[in-house]
Length: 500
Image (cartoon, rainbow, N blue to C red; front, side, top):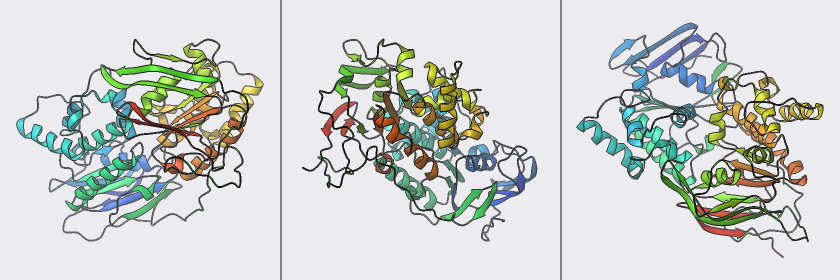
């Protein structure tokens, strides 16, 4: 079906006519984007949503068909100007900056948007600095301008990249899962920014698995399936709630905080043992104080929910508990459940899903290697597997619907496809601790539901959960304790108590 724009006084900013890619996943694509239009695009993991954005911006070239731009009052076949005036905000941009070897401050990243380059390569002029300060104020980035982007939280990085896209006063914004990783407050702030931008005449193309989170705008909707773009909303499917980690009782529950009600997972009469203990632990990242001091214990039978605004220290806490970061001198982290507290043993006993873990997997590793590496406590390097381990690989792959990804290279996958592999990697070895740091980001609804089916058996086998989430719907029923962080410190710590 052809996606037509209404008649406007000017030609569309970009037109795609019968566009196909040599290796898919899009075929015979027809689409046009006019000034001021707002498009909301949905589709399953791997359907081609991010590929569509890359085509519009000119990062990919059609193997057949026609792409044409109308920018700065002239028709253009070249995409060079589009890379400035049709900026993209995507998880892959975060990957670039996090993998960089040089310091790139927030101000450097913002200023780079003026040319469409990823790095700032020239001294800024006075008008450019003025524009940077305007954008920084709009997105609450002023206090972060001097910070290395690698030290920011996921949500802070996302706001920085949105600011970078706004710097050249673009004709259109291309947004890839813009709300993932943002707290409810940050989502509301970003939504207000997008409303202001749209009202000023900037076109928007937003792809998402969470259409309920987008701001209220006059969206035109389209859905990608089987390589084709169809106008209108997809056929609705009935949402399936996550399974309880253990069977829910019929007794009504309340909590000591205004959170969704939970059921305790373990009702053991024996004294709980310490799994992880933090004693006055502090973490510094690239010279920036990121967490602490924190004193906290994780005991057997406890399953934690960790909340806090962007930049509160949640991801730093997750990586500290998992042993990817170390406490500064004067504090300590102990893990008594480990025989030896070595990196290989931590990785073999702890499953961790988060943004940084995903970035490290963007290599020429097959999906099978990503999954199987968990058995050896490594990343990307699979040991010789026993028949039972091979069976487990295929069992988890089938449950998460990633069997067709086992032979594919991780650096060619969509964000959602890679995240499904990372979730499988985190649970495949039945870890003692499972830490999900916004673990369900980038997943479509069926993928989220498939992952939930794995959790009850894991918990019954002795796995303990720590869930970091900005979305209440992403929290599995049955979490027992709640930790709240603010500015790197614990500001709330309590049990979720059943009504007697």
